[in-house]
Length: 452
Image (tube, rainbow, N blue to C red):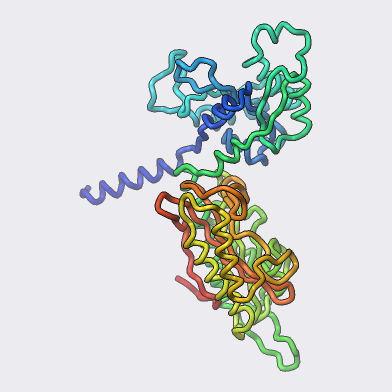
């Protein structure tokens, strides 16, 4: 084997290792938040659809509630940062052990004093399946009592209200909070999870980048279909007939199916987020209906699939087949300029609102209302939002705070006229120490092209 071949094989092996390495979450920000609040524990209760819980545990478990309890170490002289207990259904014990416990172990570290492998963040994890007939909130309360209750608390017949403080995400269900209160814990909301989720690790960025590549490939398929579509004139019809593709009228649903086939081939799910509108429905930000596509009208494709690890991609392009260069051309030029103005502002330490403000100002310079309400003509939404295990998460480019390295956000200015259509251009970027990185590139142009 030549030196070049050996180097190539080593690189491929490294890529495979990185691709199949399980994701793991650093729970130290959670233990630190508990200490900072002078609280006793952190509790999250939810199911596989709860993005906070999915992020914290990396457990893609059942559609019925389960719980996570995290407590900081009470001994600052040890390497252990704390303990985390996942209260999982018994039928999911093996999966929980694999995804929550084993995936968080550091295989290269020495054993701890108690003989268990070190965990990457010093938070020792375990799975418990006791109390399966109880509500997940009750099970979490029992774990809190066991880990932080102490002998004096255990000797009481009934805990008193507010005996201890438990931090929870703001999204915790009311019934779970009630069970915690009944057990003597006072729930207090924390934004520690949202803050931790906002700044992505290199492993998370890698997952998002892979999904984003599939996203733009899906848009590429739609653009190719539009480029191949035929304009048919009917002299007896005052309105030109819909475009035809592969011998049949082209509709937004047919185009959506073509996109989703590409996404499936990449191993990602469309998750019901392949938004395609044409003409007036292109002004609907979340259109998933079925409309015929006519020549000369805007076709807006907003594709936001979800990868196997739970991370989303997000990209938008707008095309017009056989346009006349009217409203849609002016709107496209304005949105392109707004996108560039927004990107020019992206840098660490820049207030997030500044990015939105520059995009809005550019659209206003082209004569579009930068503060239009939904259903009105103009710019009706923010310039961008965070993307991760939720399609919309922190930070918002219309909200408070500053951009930081590790933020993954969309840049997506757009203008709309409910009677005519809509134009939006969206890319996903990573904020870096130097500025930003596009996580997947895709060409621009209002006229669809059959690209290689």
